[in-house]
Image (cartoon, rainbow, N blue to C red; front, side, top):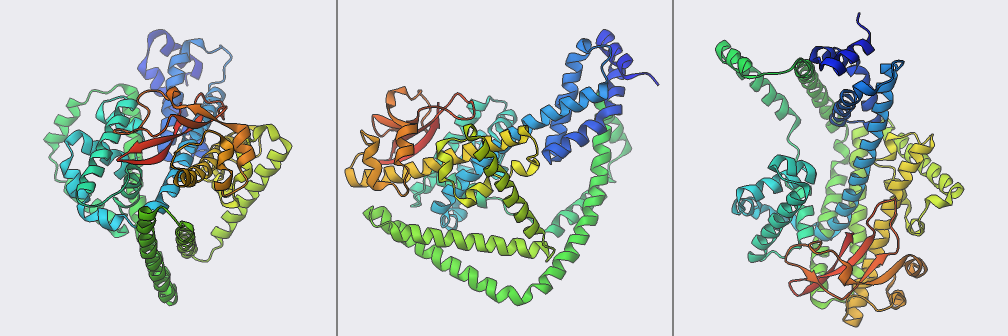
Length: 504
């Protein structure tokens, strides 16, 4: 058998596709398995594998003669996987927090949006409709939207923002007042619902049966039309084999899951009445919350009852989710084991923070226990927190979460200040003292500052919006070694002022 380095030299000197394909065949299982253990996602593991072999092709001529290729591939795979996990965990943490904050203000809007959503989508032109479907129906990133539309990330973001604004105007003309942020949350949470498990198995079986009618001549013509290199054939062959095996396994799993669901349904029948009562109470509180929100919008006063009801709705939602999770675990204590694991990891992070105070930022002290647990999902659950690298990554996510939570506290104080004083931003941070829900003034004064709105880059505000004041509140320094620093900007739109968090 030809040695790895000989095959690599053949590829470096002669660009031999056969030599490189053989290297991929030998080591693709190792790379994919190592990546999967790190990222816990088959799709991300494939992405890591492609990146690792791309690095190998690029650096083939520069490897030392005594290089052990297996060890080299393993190390590159780990570094690449860590970068992918870091990127995904920060994105998911920010998106999850944004959804949780916005959902409290938009929980009752879906009943008004749903009957008109498809008419609103039809009113968009085709590129805008495609952008909304990719971004909020399929929850793809802006980069993926741009790739699908053949545009840059910035162009995709502008198209998505423009399409959301057109949807908002469509609903506004029909008497449904909702902000662009609230509309995005409602669509993302409700537009696509899970199909029944049995439907996927039925469709798959019908598709396989229909596929057998394709003529041989058509298959031969299609084969001739595809020109692939040896490496591409190897990868496609492996993907087809995995797809066929995955389809058989999925159908078998569907049958097993169907039986398990029927058993769980019978076991949980005595709890159905209690669940219905809980959901009825949830609907009653939701209706009451909607009425109070309308009254608060008109009077801009007396928000204490509204906040109390929001808390009750959030608690009911958490109780319902906990009940659903307990049923799914089928009494096997998985939820308890997971909770203990998360609490243990939180203890590790807190102990690490006490021993390494330089890793903290002042905003961390205002995190609640629930938000500490949120920092474990989805990032730290992929790490065992047994080494410095894992701990640094987990602390980076925690700092992001702490900063966003502190931004919510500042916004709450600003809204109350604006109602009381008729101006969006105070000239001095000490003026916010009577309106702060927690003792945040010292941290606010030491870490944040009043700055001129003229420093905001052009084009950073939402479409059809303008600055609501000449002053903004921004963090004095950035966190996690990124260039941007958090800035709270008053934005005026349709004769009302709200607050937008920007990084620049």
